[in-house]
Length: 382
Ligand SMILES: NC(=O)c1ccc[n+]([C@@H]2O[C@H](COP(=O)([O-])OP(=O)(O)OC[C@H]3O[C@@H](n4cnc5c(N)ncnc54)[C@H](O)[C@@H]3O)[C@@H](O)[C@H]2O)c1
Image (cartoon, rainbow, N blue to C red; front, side):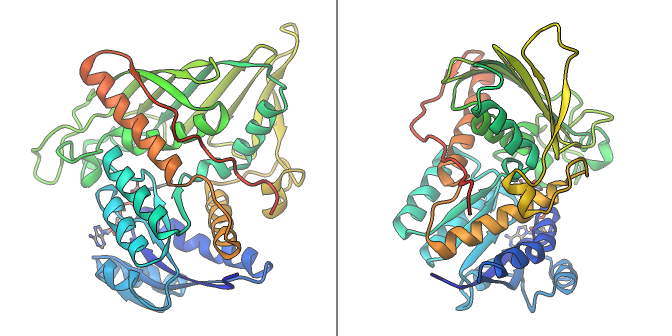
């Protein structure tokens, strides 16, 4: 058992700052299990930004070059919060150095890159997770429990929507995310991974997609006002291995939607939904159609996350809590040599689904996905 885990955090942008803030909470939970989690270095090409984040989170060393951080002797875990185009390359380098990995979503920009990264972590025998923290929200845990317990009957229809307004304002359409010339740009790559992973986690493997991906408001690069247009919305029909069907929409040009992820599952005996601004609860409608409709079911200490986070039912829960639990679960899995989910196979399944969506849109046809990488269940008792 490895009782000390030194972490190299790569990236001090939005994701890096979110992770940095939650290491404290995860370290507290892990200390309770006799494991010392320590952020030892933060790397970002923008050193001023790195220094400021390091000061706030008490990280003793900053580096401009991620390689210098990965190869430090006191680093066991590499946390990749760099832009998507860096993920596969950095994950491969970290695995070769024998480091465990947390890689922000998506795992890679193409399935080929994802396959290369998966092969390398399997060769190295390291533990590797993809940062799809929505699985670890109390709402997702509760919704999965409701489905597993058969309270909806057999799920037959799914509606998923992830909308943000980040690209609605032309002034915001800058940086790597909005550059359509780069692989993996567009709302479906930015927002899709969370929903696709949740759908796989809740309903099962996605076997086929039919999609249209488009630029409605012309999200061109604002760096120089030119460049290829990144797509800002996707409409996707879905088929699941268990026979369910559904629809997924993503948009980052959605006025009024700050961060709105919603999933509704209809089954033969009931329906349930989760919404991202109420992550401590699900809405549940059971049995008779004559019943009054959805009621609220709160997550609390009877759920694993509720116990870990000391949740009081009815008190709002944030995505930051899911981040803390994700880091805790990963630290525990590494220390105890156990598998963790979502792992790189799950990340690759998401990459394949994203590629199938793009392919379906380009070729105007259904695209089948092979289910040769089934998801691992999240361990419920730790
Ligand atoms: N799971 C989530 O909820 C979530 C949320 C936000 C972002 N993300 C993911 O996190 C990743 C980072 O996104 P972000 O929003 O933080 O991006 P960002 O642009 O805010 O930050 C990226 C940082 O990486 C640095 N950087 C870029 N290239 C580098 C290099 N080669 N070497 C060293 N530093 C480099 C930049 O200076 C910047 O500070 C993306 O893959 C994104 O999809 C996930």
